[in-house]
Picture 1 (cartoon, rainbow, N blue to C red):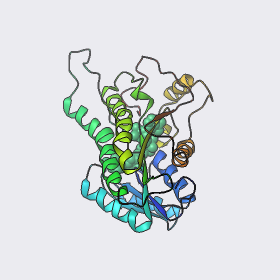
Picture 2: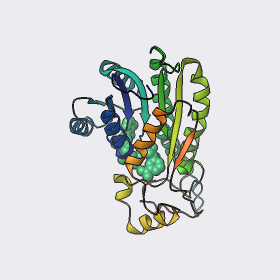
Picture 3: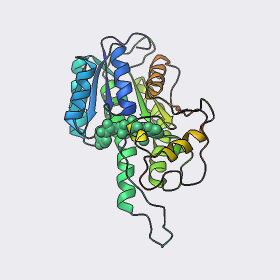
Length: 267
Ligand SMILES: NC(=O)c1ccc[n+]([C@@H]2O[C@H](COP(=O)([O-])OP(=O)(O)OC[C@H]3O[C@@H](n4cnc5c(N)ncnc54)[C@H](O)[C@@H]3O)[C@@H](O)[C@H]2O)c1
């Protein structure tokens, strides 16, 4: 599995998005069958068509067990289902923990953010790992690999990011625990913590925010590319001794304490 991906299949949640899309493309290039799980079937199907007949879209939400189980069954029909990459995100404008006028952060909004950015990846991870457990082990005893997506906000949350940062810190925290849980069944779990990567959500940000974000990156002085995220997923797959880690992909960025993201900006 670390070298030969042919005959294997993967499930990518958010697989028609910026990071998920680049990953789905790379996994198809590596010879894998890929299931793209997206809420909007038309969008997922259009992207799958672009990738060719080894990619198939399934409509559904990553928190919906039935949809995830259908996606896993579809992945099993495409090959030995052994890779799960989770790259779901939505932009929700979130307030400060308490506003200057004394209004506290809305709890329903906090819950919604955490359900989307933490519960979803855990749901995908647990159901995928359960499916991997039935696979024949490779030469290392490995049956599958999970890659979740954290963020530099896991360590450097900015103002107005309490819910997002909590979710992403949760992803980083659960990754090591999952790797230890899943050792028994030969499943690895890693996560990637991206800094600013130029995907459609960042492309739509103001020039001021874009310049400020690039200003925080040490080197190379630019946004990351979605293909670099896909390359890191590939490196994780090819490196069996790498396990339980959340790897920053951020050009050694340092984040200021200030609120970089205005109310309308992407996270
Ligand atoms: N792009 C960045 O700069 C960056 C930086 C740090 C972290 N991240 C994280 O990476 C992940 C992907 O970000 P992106 O930039 O590729 O975003 P994106 O918006 O391009 O892609 C996200 C995809 O998730 C899909 N999606 C939304 N809700 C879903 C659900 N309930 N079930 C299944 N799919 C769903 C969307 O349709 C979309 O295609 C997010 O978790 C984000 O927080 C991104």
